[in-house]
Amino acid sequence: MAIKNKKLNLKDKYQYLTRDMAWEPTYQKKEDIYPDEQFEGIKITDWSQWEDPFRLTMDAYWKYQAEKEKKLYAIFDAFAQNNGHQNITDARYVNALKLFLSGVSPLEYAAFQGYARVGRQFSGAGARVACQMQAIDELRHSQTQQHAMSHYNKHFNGLHDAAHQHDRIWFLSVPKSFFDDARSAGPFEFLTAISFSFEYVLTNLLFVPFMSGAAYNGDMATVTFGFSAQSDEARHMTLGLEVIKFILEQHEDNVPIIQRWIDKWFWRGFRLLSLVGMMMDYMLPNKVMSWAEAWEVYYEQNGGALFKDLERYGIRPPKYQDIANDAKNHVSHQAWSTFYQYSQATNFHTWMPEEEEMAWLSEKYPETFDKYYRARFEHWDKEHKEGRRFYNNTLPQLCQVCQIPVIFTEKDDPTVFSHRQIKHEGERYHFCSDGCCDIFKNEPEKYIQAWLPVHQIYQGNCGGADVATVVEKYYHINPGVDNMEYHGSPDHQRWLDIKGLKPLKSQSEKKTAA
Amino acid sequence: MSVNAISEYHAEPKDRVENFNGMQLLYVYWPKHLMFCAPFALLVAPDMTFGAFVDELLKPAVAGHPDSGKADFLNAQWLLNDEAFTPDPAASLIDNGIDHKSMLTVTTSGLEGIQGSAS
Image 1 (cartoon, rainbow over the protein chains, first blue to last red):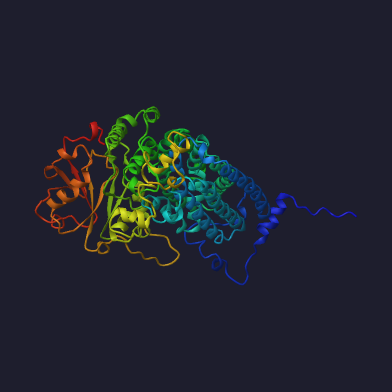
Image 2 (image 1 turned 90 degrees about the vertical axis):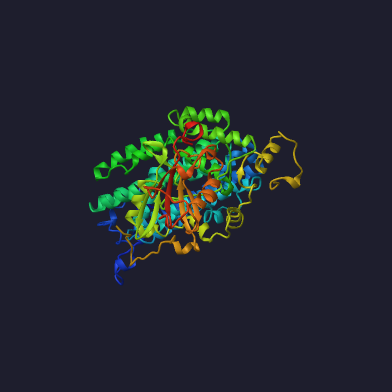
C-alpha cells in the first residue's frame, strides 16, 4: 500500500520546528513576557528578519552531536589506554593545559549559562532557538574539555581543582570577570560581547593557538576535542556575524550603541588574550607561530576585512585598535614576566626560555625582544642557576576593569608603564590603559564593585594574612608541587622518569613526591 | 554616564578604606625597573612615617633588583598621584598627604635597570 511521503524539506522543517513553535500572546503583554528586551535601547522592528544560516533544528542537532560525541570518547579511551601523555613533546606543555582547564573551560560553562539566560529573553523565536543550541554547545565544550584533560590529572600536578580555582586565584579573575561583565549585561550586549566580539572577531586567537599547540606537541586528546568542537565554533562565528548585522539593519539608533559595545568588548577581549599570547610564545615546547604573527593573521587581516564590510552600517574599527596592534610585540613577554615572578601563587609551573627559545623570540620579535626583555630574562636565568630563583615578594597593582596587574607599557614608550588614575565619588581608581578607563567611565557603578583579588587578600577575605596561606588554603594549590619553578619540580622529575633519563623511581614517589 | 539597568541601580565601592581594618592601600611605581612587572600594591598603616615606609616596605620590596643597593630613595624624585611631591620622612603617610589608594612614583636618576634596559 502506498503512503504519501511526509518527510519535510529542510526549510519547511526549520519553519515548523522553530518559528512555528512561537505564538503571538493574547493574555499577557509581550513586554511583560520579555521584560529584558527593551532597556538597553536596542530597537527591533521585525524579528522575522532574523536569518539562521544553518537552519538547524533540535532533532538534527541531537543526532549530529551524539555521533560526534561517540567518536570523541572512543579516542579519549584509546588515549588513556595507550598512556598518551607519554607522547607529548615535553612536560612543560602540560602547564598550557592547566591554564586552559582553569582559565578557559569554566568560561565555556559561563557561556552556557549566559546563552541559556538570553535564550529566554528575546521575543524572536529564531534568536531564542539559536541561543539555546549554543547554550548546549557551550555546556558540552566545558564537559568534553574536562574529560579530554582528565587523563593528565592522573600523571601531573595542578589539574585537580580547576573550577574551585577559577573562582579564587588572582589571575583567573581576569577571565572570570570578563564573562561576569558580559553575563550581567542585557541580552543584546551579551550577544555583542560574546557572539560577535569574542566568537567572531577573536575566537580564532584562542582556539587556533590552543588546538594547534596541542597538535604540535603530541596531545591527541586535546586535538580531538578541538576537531569535535570545530563545527560548533563555525556555527557560533556565523551566528555572531548574523547577530550584529541583524541588529544594525533593524534601526539606525542601534548603531552608536553597538559601536560602544564593540569598542568595549574588543578591548576587554584583547586584554584577556594576553594570557593566550604568553601561552603561545612561552609555554609550547614546539611552537606553532608567534603571538605577533597570530595577531597579524587573525586580527589585523581578518578583522580588517570584517570592519571594512561593516563600514556600510556606519560601524568603524574598534577604538584603541592601534594600541592593540602595536602591543602584539610586547604583551606575551610582559605576561610571562608576570607569571614567572608570581609563580608562587599560580596553579602551574613557570621557567625561563632555553637558549634556542630565546633565539626564536629574538627572531620573531626583532624590534622588541632583545631591546626590552632579553636582559631581564638572562638576569633571571643566571640568578636561578646561582640558587636565587626570583619571586616577587609583594602583590601587584591591578586594573579596576580587566583585573590584570598594571603590566602593560605605553605605545610610544615601552619603558614606561601605561597607568591611568581617576577619582570617582571621592574614591581613587587605577587602570592599565585608556581603553579600560573608558569602560569604567561609561558604567562606573558596575566596576566600583570589582572583586579585585589583591584587595580582597588585604581585606582579609581570602583565608589568611599571608600569601602562602592564601595559596594553600584558599586557592587549593600545593606549594612547590603544583607551582613555582618547573626545573626540579615533581612534574619535571616524573617526566625524566617517563623518558628514562633518570632511573625510574619507586611507585610511592610518583606524582606527588615533592 | 551611568549603568543602563532594568531597575534602579545602586552600588557600593568594594574597596573603601573602612574595609581594610585600619590600614590603607598604597601603590608604588619605580620607573625604569620593569623587572617588577607592575607597580607594587602595599598595605600600610596611615600613621606609619614616610621614612619607615621606605625602610620597612619599599626596600624589602625591591631587594631582588641589582639596582636596589644603589637606590637612594629619600633623595630621589617623587610623584604623589602624578604630581610633584617632596616627602617628609619624619611625618606620617597621611600627614604627607598620602591617602587610601594613592600612587607614589619614585625616580632614581642614573639607575636605568638591568643593563640599561629599563628592566
